[in-house]
Structures are given as structure tokens and as C-alpha cells.
Length: 185
Image (tube, rainbow, N blue to C red):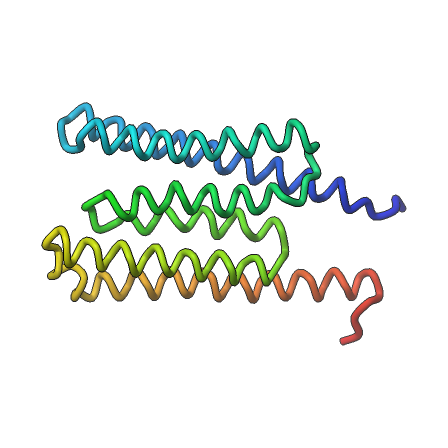
């Protein structure tokens, strides 16, 4: 049996996170590009989202290039970069389903098996959700949505996803520890 190589698994998690982030940016770019083409969104909105998403992604790729594929900093670039991308969507999009863009980040975070990191990202995500909904309600006249069951459902889904992710991470860390002989059940 081969010895455990932590740098191998960090590099593998970074690669998978990068691929997932890239695919999501493609999907969002096509989705919002079509809306701009139909005249449903302004080009300035698309430019803001596009720059925030792709610049943070490219910044992460540059980090991996210069700090190597097993850089522990990359998870922070992914988490914070993706949250910047999500914040632009949440604060500027007037649709009621923009919260779904946070769900892929939750999936990416599982790769790193770090409960503290998950809780930090959850706190920032909740700040973005709360502030974007307050902004939509107070500044954009969408108070009906902010006071609706759909808005409550958004928070419940995001909190549930993070809670389940945190439990899954704790389980994975514990089961890995049992395999390695660190934990006793």
C-alpha cells in the first residue's frame, strides 16, 4: 500500500474545485449572455458579473501556476473569489432565483474537508444573502419578495446545505481518522 501523500490530495482537490468553478462560470456566462441578447439584462450588469467571476477564477489559476498545484491558499481563493462572483449576482440581479448560484460553492467546499473553512464561508454567504435581500427590498422596491415565503425558503435551503455539508465533512474527517487509527469509535 502506498504512503499517504497530503500534497497529492490537496492538488487533486484544487484541480476538481477549479474545474467545477470553470464549468459554473461557463453556465452563468451563457445564461446571462442569452438574457443580455434578449434585452432582459443590461450589458453593464453582464460586464460586472463577467469581470468579477472570470478575474477571480484567473487569479486562482495564476496562484496555482506560481505556488504549485498543491497550494493550501487556493481553497481561500476559490471560496472568496466565488463569493465575490456570487455577491455581484445577488446584489445586482433582480431575479428571485439568484441564490441557487451559491449551491455549487457548497459542493466545491466538500473537497477540502475543513469544517472551520465551511463555517467561515457560510457566515460570508449569509451576509451576502441578507444584505442583497435588504438592498432589493429597500432600494429596488422588491419588499414583497423580501417578505415572502420564497425569501425564507432561500435562507432555509442555504443554511440546510451548509449544515449538511458541515456534517458530511465532520463524518469524512472522522472516518479518515478511523482508517488511519487516529479515532476510536
